[in-house]
Length: 267
Image (cartoon, rainbow, N blue to C red; front, side, top):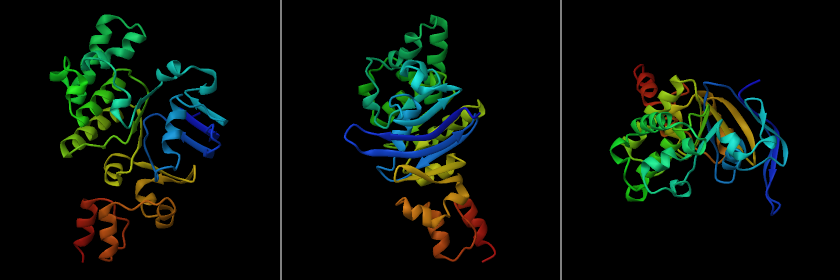
């Protein structure tokens, strides 16, 4: 069994809106997976069911053999870390250190282990010099990294990044890429929800396209981003370099600038 199994899952909100319909996804350790789709496709609802904030109204979400229906959100949080789209929905402590240390303290880890985890998380996110600063004295982009550090300190096997590139400049994007690479080398599962196709291409291999509350495509990014009918159904666009390749008549499935320049040489 894969680490994460979403089996015939449906979710209907109290107002009667059916957000997810018979969804099936399987993700194993070491995978980097991007979920893409327009607003309302069911991406965030799916993510919240994975970390236990929502429970499926049909089917099962199983994490490392644990059916989320049988466990509390706090118990699931030991397995799944979720970085919210808006950091202001997640931050509530008065210093960066206390924010990042909150969950390790909640689980009553010893002082040395808390210090080790927090120091590592701050180093990975570039926040070592801000450990005593109030998070709300930092920029939006830096507050995003505070929430990432808080999740890193939990040392979960599965980490969900919800729109991580929001508010980030190139420096921030490069820093995100470094963090994702580090987590990949540690064998973690990294799952992102993103509207940034270039970010997805740069950092993720497997891409899942969602529309109408379900999965309509799931595969290698090179194949997925050239399934033009599926992208159109999901109201998505190819990466810009792929669009350019089509405009100039390149026949290959281009998804990177490097690939585009290489394909141009014979022309």
